[in-house]
Length: 362
Image (cartoon, rainbow, N blue to C red; front, side):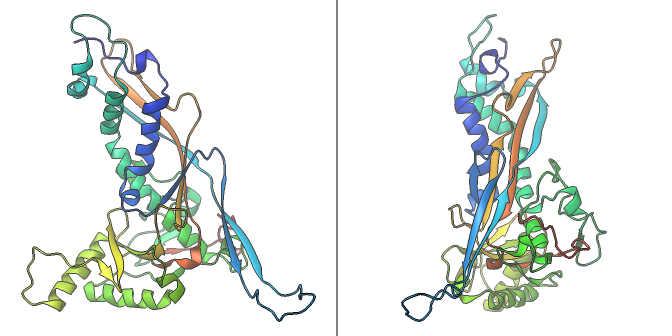
């Protein structure tokens, strides 16, 4: 077999392959494919997510307006991507079918692998990373915040929940995911910086006994959601698969005794789309405006760790056939308008003793 070499023998990547990598890291996951998150790339340090709330801005007509009227509240939440690394070792022979057709025959050293082939191989190598990113968007938490989270049913000790725990691909500890952000915001003092954009409405926190309990909670959450939020086009209902399966079974028994089990019940409640999510912990439901657009209530910030050694694929050592792949990325997640989210979260959060929650506004 001819010698295997990535990227014309260079250890760092640019252009087509690197662009494909960042797209893969951010977009090849369930949350993005379902159209639930807006991705902002190129954030080197910090990105502000502004929120404006207007109060009473109407007053009587007079020559000189009353300057004491007009309530305007401006607040910011932030995306501050944190570093983490993807690393694995692999044998190029496992991927020979992808690059062999592009290699010359004989003992010539192959100096350049087509970028499209490189991108294909990188995608195959990073399949597990996609699962990790999807779960981390929702369940990540820094060690300090994860220590304040415990299971609401008391079956899991504090700090040992899925929030900030271990995914199959690695630890979810590098940034605070959406659930941690919601818990932190809901527990923050009303006067804190974190509450300036409003606070998440926590409708419940217990486990669902059956599908009927899920339906009851859906109605309670619908009533807790203000009508002006219900009318928003981007409003969707996110639900874990355990809850959806129970609810789906309950609907089948409720609507038709001898229903055709080849047909699935419509994924809707009060006309709003229900999206079962693999990434969500059991007994979790969210009502919110989650889209891929600027109006989304869930944003993700991504960037390269630096401009040079973002992606390295090199020989592990001179006397080995194995290669290693190392990817340096930065990522963060935040909610934009907490007051527009209604949640059933099976966790409790113990805020700081000062009562100020995280106190960081973001």
